[in-house]
Image (cartoon, rainbow, N blue to C red; front, side, top):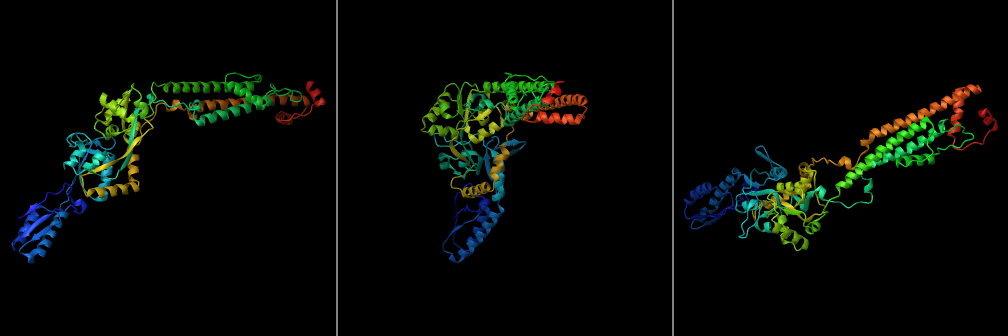
Length: 516
């Protein structure tokens, strides 16, 4: 009398009992009313009822209303948990004690809050993502969803045409592509026109330039103030003009020298300090330059997939049974075909993402994988780098059973999370870099790395100027005693005469007195 149709695996309260199980009821007499109620409770049906009534039409409307009421009550009371399958991969799903955490777990939690459902997560039994064999059967997480062993698969599952035919896939929650992961010492960048400036940072070069001009000005000032350097301002020409001071400082900076050299103690103090500064700067520059040139001398220059396909020195491979492998297998690009044939011939596949990263760290192996996952490896391992070229752009999606009504609700929720910035926040949270490059200081020496030398130079310049003032004051005091004038008056006259840029005509009387 009763026939029950098999319900789809996703018949849960979450989706407002949209997956209703048909119930065919044949009412033949008045006792069928009690029978209908008992069967509805026993079989735990959730909603929509199709009723065929024969011989007792007067009981049809009442019977249908009663069964609908019972079914709706059961639907509200029965709130089953969704079975979610996933796979361990950093940072999508990771173990933390007895719990799981990661990007996918946070995403699943946000979806549960937005849609209001409960779930239970388990790791995929065979540790695979999902690949179809020759007989058409799927393994991994895709297989569990196809066989009804799981309601959802939340993992970095790439949206592909083959998977779309077997299961339902939501709107992508993350965009990615295919790139190459290898050691930094294998990748060689083209030399730029201004790579010779790379040993120092911009602020260091600016500080050296300022130090050069300040030192030249100090040499010029000391050359004018010191009586030992310029004894007769009325008759003698000052040797240390500003142009000559700039030339002298530049010669010292290049270790070439430029005469004449200072004779006064004050000038020699400044010059010695500048020479010491120049030696330290040049030593740091050549040391950093030689180390950077040595690190760039790599036997291979792999910038993209064409370079990888055209060489036979380095081994390369990808994840076995992955969508990345399928991309190269189905591609008509000659370079991509050679890459697939090489991997198939050498059997250079890896069983997990961690294995691929480890082989890349060991050297002489290029791991081909999803660019998003490779970016994480670069953030965690300073010796690795990802190639700039990214091909085969695709997205990661959540998997549902084929034809499931869950698909629409999940896709809308993912779009809402993306528009609210939640997906960007999760990406920033789980892809935070803990890498501190070891060669950062050597490759570009910053200003604070030489602040001690700048301080020594500043002290030397200050001492030199003070000594020149002391020398001028000593001479002014001696002259003031001879001419019966105050020391301040004579010092003021000396400063005015020595710091005046234009020379006055010789005064014979003053000249004779000075000679006397």
